[in-house]
Each structure stands twice: as structure tokens, then as C-alpha cells.
Length: 370
Ligand SMILES: Nc1ncnc2c1ncn2[C@@H]1O[C@H](COP(=O)(O)OP(=O)(O)OP(=O)(O)O)[C@@H](O)[C@H]1O
Ligand SMILES: [Mg+2]
Image 1: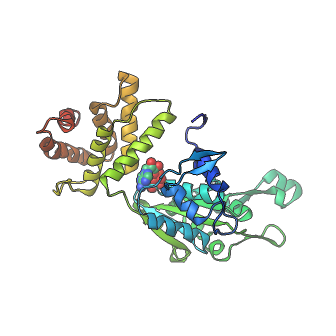
Image 2 (image 1 turned 90 degrees about the vertical axis):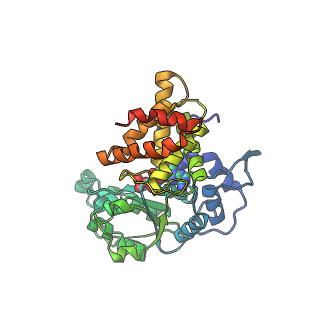
């Protein structure tokens, strides 16, 4: 690649810098004001396309980054060109944050104009605050104003990401209502202070359905968003592909150059999908643990296991490490989940272990679950 990125987790616009640059070089189709790419290109950037793009005479592959409902991606892109905000809701680990980063990087060229919603989020952190030294010295002025992400988005005509919006107190959420309807921010401290949003501004919020009820959103705010529910991956092959590609890039990023073991990936994807859905691939009902069995967790189990095998045994991922790391994910909430996993091994895995192969080896590692 020849690209050295000195960051633990580079933002999407850096990670996919070449793809984005190459797309921007293309003759632009129809696109909303201030957008760096057309809706077609934004979609293609997220779900990939066959035709490579060109950059300085070299071909750049436009890779698929999100696996799921492609029509939903088109809908989400179009929402951002319209008057309402985009709300991505769903179970933990379904790539809501990833999608919101990809959309912002593609449309506005930056994904870091972001409010991180917490129980302590205040209006100041959303709109703007003041540099108090300057405020006392010179009184309220534009120079003394410290912009927060919403102000930035409106001023520059870029997207503002609002992560975990339902975790914020109601007052903080409500401060969005008038801005999303009128696209104007009033700054009462400045004489006649109003900021009109430039075209290109909009809000992408994410919310985790498991957090809901903590601060149920007001219906006034809900009406200002189009909701898209992101569903967990429901296809084993797709899930295995996500685990494989994400694990590969995370390991390379950690400086670990080892092959991804696709048999182990498939085993892991099968276990996660069966436990998540409460159904084996043969169609038998089984118990589901309470712990989140998301694709993101599966990626992290694989990466942890591969790193452990690499550093302690100097070899590729092994099944004992896999099961040991799975325990950390599945059994972190309660002992009942441990029992669910044990039962899974003594029924489902045992059945498959009757034939030689990876399931037989997997079954041997049941010894770690106690
Ligand atoms: N459908 C998918 N396509 C591609 N990658 C996926 C998909 N689902 C999950 N992933 C992987 O899972 C990771 C976790 O995603 P992300 O952090 O965006 O989830 P989230 O929905 O925001 O979770 P949370 O609710 O916990 O914040 C992604 O970075 C990606 O590696
Ligand atoms: Mg998230």
C-alpha cells in the first residue's frame, strides 16, 4: 500500500483516501449543493462497484464496506440531501457508527465533526460555548465563540454526526428540534446573532435500541428524522466475509501479518449466528445468551484470538484461543450465558463433532467452558 498511517483508528476519510479522491476526479453526476460526491457515488463508495475508479492513471478498486440492505443505503443517502435528519437505529454492533462515518466522509469529506452523546452532554457541547478569558476581556464576539459540531456543520455546510443521541438528557436532544426545522441557530449573546445553515448541512444520528427507554426521544424530535433500522447480518456467508475482511485490516493495522483462517472464521460466524438467532443451521431451536452476539463482537473475538496465538505461540489462530476469547464475550454479563454456551457445545457442537474435521477439534475445546 505504501501508506503509513500513524493512528490507532484512522477516520474513514483517511482510511479510504484514495478511493474518495479517485471518485471525486470522476465527471460528477447530479448532486446536491456542497456535496463532494453524487448520491450514486456515495452509494457505490459504501456498497462497492465493479468498475474501478482512476487516480493518476492507476486503477482504484471501489470496495464494499457495508454488507446489508443496499436499497436502505440509497434511502439513507437521499434523506441526507433532504430536509430531515437521518437516524440510524438498531442493535449494538450492527455498523451504525461505521455507516455514519462512511456517509460523512463521502459527502462532506470529514467524519470527525461529531457529538458523542452521553448522559452528561450539554447544549454547549452541541452548539457552541465561549472562551471565557476573551469573553471577559472583550465581551461577546465571534472570536470569543468556540464552535461545537452543530455550529461547525451549519457554518461550513457539512454533516454533523450525533452518536448515541438517546443517551443524552432531554434538554440536549430538544436543542436540535428548532435547528432541524428552521436550519437557523440563534446566538442571543451576539447582537442580532443568527447563523443560517449553509447547504450541505444535515445531521446523522445513531441510537442503540438496547439503550432506549433511558431517555425516550420526544415525538417532536422524532418527526424531524427519517429512521432507518439497521438489522444484524442474517446470512452466514456475508457474516463470514465481514469477519474476514475486518479482521484482516485490523491485524494488518496492528502490524501482524498472518493469513486469515477461513475455516475458523466460518466456525465463529456459525456459532455467533446460531446463538444470536436461537436457531441452529439445521433448524433446531436453542437458547440465546443475553450478551450481545454482534458481528462486531465476532470480529473482536477473532482478532483477539489471532493476536494471542501470534504473540504467545508464534503461530496462526488456534481453536483453544478462540474458545477462551469467546468466553470473555459471551460470559461477561452473567453465569446463565456460560450455561447457554456449555449447552451449545454439548448439543450442537457435539453432534457435528461426529465427523472428522474442524468441529471435532472445536468440541475438544469445550474443556475451557466451566
Ligand atoms: N453489515 C455490516 N457490514 C460491514 N461491517 C459490519 C456490519 N455489521 C457489523 N460490522 C462490523 O462491526 C463493526 C461495528 O460497528 P459499529 O461500531 O459501527 O456498530 P454500532 O452499530 O455503532 O454499535 P453500537 O450500537 O455498539 O455503537 C464495524 O466496524 C464492522 O467491522
Ligand atoms: Mg455506534
